Image (cartoon, rainbow, N blue to C red; front, side, top):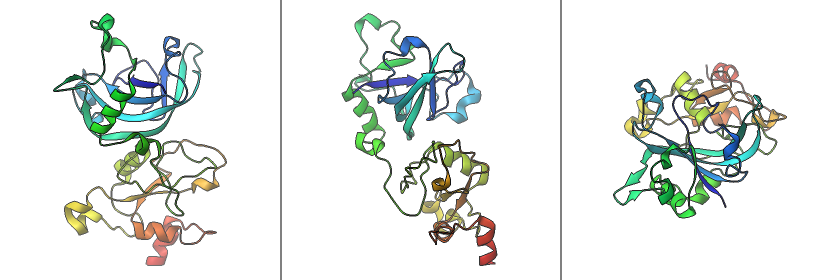
Length: 257
């Protein structure tokens, strides 16, 4: 198995899309190969305007994923890798601890190691970073369970092989963006978990796909503004109450009114 660190900069000429795709030069093709397991890394912040988009201003690891298909970039001068199984860490993992760096730095690269945007690491170091993020290798590669009702919050969606997530605490990019846009109130009944339950309800809500994934013929890019809406578990269950009928938000609103 191939284990990698992928650097993602706040400001870059490369066309990266966190958890979806990674744009890179041909010189890294020998190490960025399909099936590689990766950990995302950010260097120290340079532009403070990006503070809100980071887990830390210092160097840190912030997510785990794997490499899917690698293809030529449309510019014809570089490559782009599909990113699969992405899970963002809940907290920043510093690039070193009391025992030193979490990556082994070869003596031959002691002066310029951190300049490499893509770095190979050992399985032991990969698993150590995951353990600090309170994840295991098996958990990140199998983050979902097959279910019959609620849809996955994976970034790439709509494949004929549909997965259903029960790990709502493992927020994916689409889910986070949808909540930033729509908020935490149920779009059907206006229920808010924090308002009713206090601190234990903070940050909890289901996210519903307006168009069911199983109706899609191929993978599509999901727009969190128009394709995803927050709903409470009760309303989510009623939306999918019948196998041959998925209620719309407006239809369910009329029912409860």
